[in-house]
Structures are given as structure tokens and as C-alpha cells.
Length: 190
Image (tube, rainbow, N blue to C red; front, side):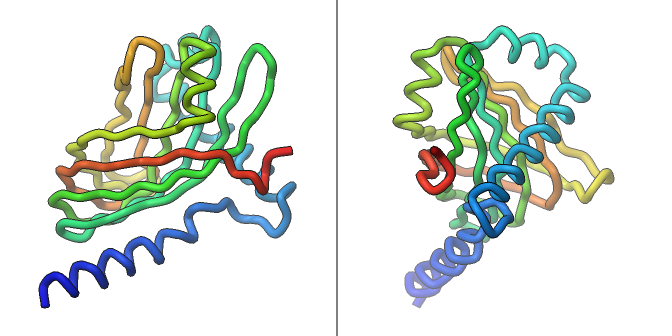
């Protein structure tokens, strides 16, 4: 009985968050515009919270900005989102999707923004064409609009990639392992 409940719960979480895999908009052009607004707002927020990030990003080979909504209900959860990777020397944008599966202890729903900074063209290319990330997390956030608290963190993934995370809203307490996949959104790329 417990196993069936877990399977049903997993399916509900994944299906309820699948709508978060795409930005709002009826046409590809409207969706790209929505992603660009999210991109601009996220970078502006990051630069206000971490002024040194602007210099780091301006010197990088590229970066990616993602909006992600995830939920965790006791031991299982998931999330989805969308974003754009930018090759700075070429000015080329690659629109992407992401999905996440969480296993661990926790409860809540959270809307977060993630900014990856790629210090080499190789790291950017690998992210766009392979896109896996896997890691453990410990997170506590309670935020609604401008009220509450959540940390903006900078994490060095490897020598060629850094990541900033910011909580937009939600209530979440978790300790978990998360597998995340990023991939090109073929419906939005030319």
C-alpha cells in the first residue's frame, strides 16, 4: 500500500510540475519574449544581491539563466523549468528546458532562479549539448514576493563552471539528492 501511494504521489508531483517546463505564450516568439524577460529580471536581481557577479559574467565565455519550480513531498519530488544559454562572443542564444527529480526528506514548493557561468567555451558547449547535473542539496527558504528570507548562493561546480541560485518565492525545507537534466528546446531554437 505504501509503495502504491508513493508511485501515485510521484506521478502527481511530476504531472503537476510539467506545466512549468514551458514559458507562458501562445507562439514560439511569445515564449522567447517571456524567457528574455525572465532572463533580464533574474540578472538584474542577481546584480543587486551580488554586485561582483556582473563582472564575473561579463568575463565568461557564456552563461545560462533558468526559472525552476520544484516541489518535495516527504521523500519524493520534482520540478521543471526553462531558460536560455548565451554564448557571449557570438551573441548566440540557445533556449532550453530542464527537469528535476528529488529523493530525500522535505516538504514544500519553491520557485527558484539559477544562473550558470561558464568560464570556457568547452564548458558552455558541453552544457548545451549534454546538460546533466547531479548533486545533493540542503535548503531552507521561506519567501513570498518581497517578504521572507532565502539565501543567494554561489557554488563552484568545477574549474570551468559556477552557479548562482536565488529563491523567488515559496516555502521549502529539504535535504535531498536531485538529478537534473537540461536540454535544448527544439520548438524555440531556430
